Length: 490
Image (tube, rainbow, N blue to C red):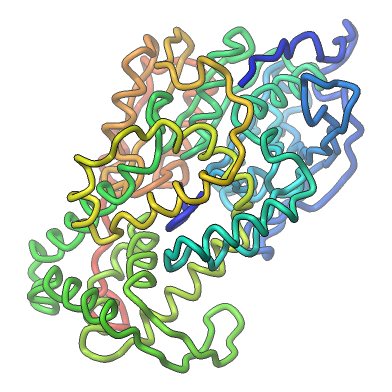
């Protein structure tokens, strides 16, 4: 869910799991060694204990090839941790869960007060047999069917593992193997974005192994992701520009932000702009050509968080009046982050198995897609890739609405451009012990916002939603808009 353009059989998993020794202490089933784990930018470091967990690549062939999955344990702060542990599941699909923990360590570290935190990079991501596709990093930036097909074939030819084995269905089996291997009684699951699909499917398949669940930026199990992406993004952008118009200081600086965006989009579509500008990541001067696709990608990703959404009217205004440097800088920064954060092959294995085959007839939706600023190219690109990508292992019940009586806390950002609050309401319909919280003014993924970390800690400690004190959420709000390159008005 963080990519601008891209992203069978039911096996008896329990029969393939190692026996759980009666005397095993929680966390004792693997050999952990001290290590440093890093965030997605490679700079932030957290001390942990790390291990390699070998699992069958194909559970139907337990004597065949294995995958080495990377596991990190951040021990509880108490000398006698609970018999249940917390585990973190990132989105993408294709992003590293270990890197996510490091990125959000300030918010998530409170969860280890009484419990170990166990983080495993899902198969195909991070340091767990990643399915990387460098050729697709740029091939899908500007959609061209022939280029995308060629890049997809190149990617498939270069993969070291069978891409059919890198799906949600097998990921939840890996997670259950890990729980049993380590001897934890239950998981407390935290999933964000696509990670909420994994968490919900794990809850469906192994309900007795789940103590509590936090779903952040929720994907309903019965939703095929893709067709609504452009529509949700357009709704969020319209809301951002409307809020600018309703704020006197922003309206004074940018009297017609929607009109400026449309003019800029049409100008870049007709004639891309080339400029020389410093790369915000490396600092080296670089020639950049900006098209309407760069504008769309940049605006979409800026809208994910309130502090970057606050830049959109200014970045658009500067480019519309001839200063393309801020737009180029944001585009280069976002592109670099995406290329380093996502394993595109794993992304494709998921969406080509679980989403694209279930789009159905999109004819009626086509006019709305074409009218949105992202257009229909994202859907076309995914359909082109999935026309070549093999379908993988998919449990028959993966897309069924989830019904559960386990305690579930659902979190949404009020202005989430990819998984709006309505998605969480849809997912909550079958969750009898759930509560949905909407964080005012926030975007996609809210676990680190304001007092949400404390609410999450209280929820996991009690494994109940009834008595949570959530009044502090009222203090959250959207960030003030930048009116010039120095920031918001005083």
